[in-house]
Image (cartoon, rainbow, N blue to C red; front, top):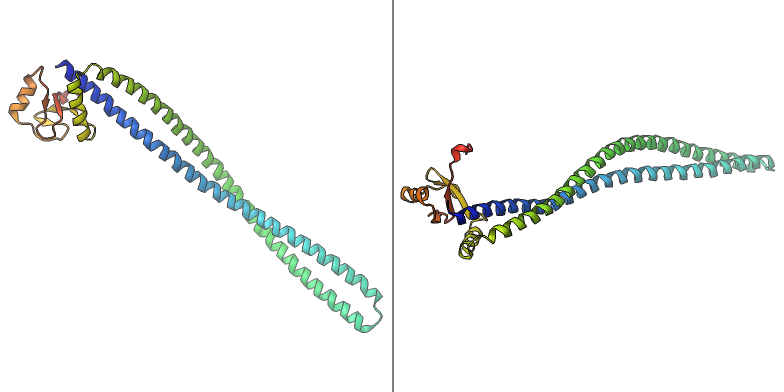
Length: 241
């Protein structure tokens, strides 16, 4: 086979692999952004549960303070009953005591209710925090993998670039220019195999006479008449294709 064609085949393999690596480099930051976004939503939900618990604890503290003040008012009202001078004053103090007891009773009921709510929220938060711990572990593992892949991709790109430069240095300038033109108009694929009178680039039939030339020629570069890619003979029966 033409030595220059061998170099072109090798260059195509390197360029194709580089394109795959570049695609991965483009997709991985998007994957990382999605991981960050998903984990951010999970963190936000946990923060909401914690905020809800803190809010209810704050309500509980306010109610306890309110009850404390109400009980103090009630104590003072009961102490004052011993100092009243008339029945009218006595009835007024009794009414005040009754009102304070009712108000304190309402606050006590509210305290019981908020404590039940706190227990429910605390139980739910415990469950969610356990789930969050698992999600955080998965997130960190996925993030490490993605970052490791990004590092690997950069290494592969440097290696591919070096190999590509070495191969390009061995190819005639006119052929290299032709290769780049064909590659640019054919989605990055300039050199493809052909087998059983079929181009594996466009999957169209190759005229028998041209295919025979491909089988017999050792020096000439032959292009597919349909997609204009450079073609070479490759027996796919040996690799199951």
